[in-house]
Image (tube, one colour):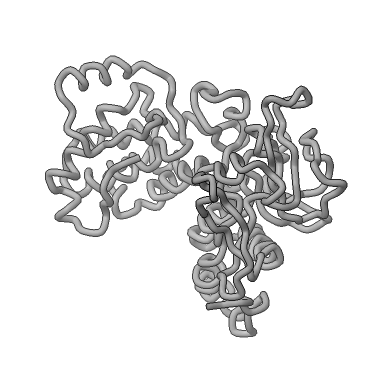
Length: 375
């Protein structure tokens, strides 16, 4: 999704380009207050002609609104900044419609699904969705509203109170979703069941699993909360302990061009590589029917998933392996299976949070071992 950064320079936030981008966002905003996800991405910096504007306005009643892949919550953050910088009522009104959308989209369990009011991409779109920052994006906007953040000071007291209640329910949902493995709270999955809070799979290459990337965003949100209660502190501490245990050192993922001219991804040895984390780790159990491509997996082992739609045995669930090199080139290059997801969280965000909320423990020394293989 293409639009320039705002929030660093108030003069730029009220400049001609920022106003044009914000107006384009209002153009795409649906009647229910949310935004659609589009491929290819919507370029909000474009100058639209009258005919194109009329076509987009004609789609206002569509219910293809969602939180996935940068839909709705980034637009709301942008509108809030431009509304505050310019004082223009149309931007304030668009932001308030979006806040109402987020409040209406919250599930009874306290979470948010990928899309609302309908499942746009299949049944998994109705699950509690941490994937691609969906639920955390919604919570971040509502948290800023609730605490009367700098860009949300124009929001009325009634909406602020509703936002605060929604955040409280959302935090409770996060805590209930934290996965317990071998008796120890760990991190979160990409999707969770809105009734049982258990992890659930989504696409054929996304089994129910411990998910490092999305869990970093969850922990960062929990660390934003003022005066966190013991349950929140415990959730952060347990997640950080898991990240420390799950780190992969001395390796990193490299994209390269093979002799046939096609791209590939491989994991290479590199003693100077920063810590890496796999996207998925095995939580134990049978992975809800995702078949194994190896004899067995260890709990907390990094896993990689291959998909062969042509196989007569394919049932909508890919085959799970223990090494990236064992899955097809299409899957190796089509997904981010490994990355330094939690490195900055562990090295910077968490120590600062711990010094603020657990000063005595911080003075006693780090909870975890020093980073291995640091540059």
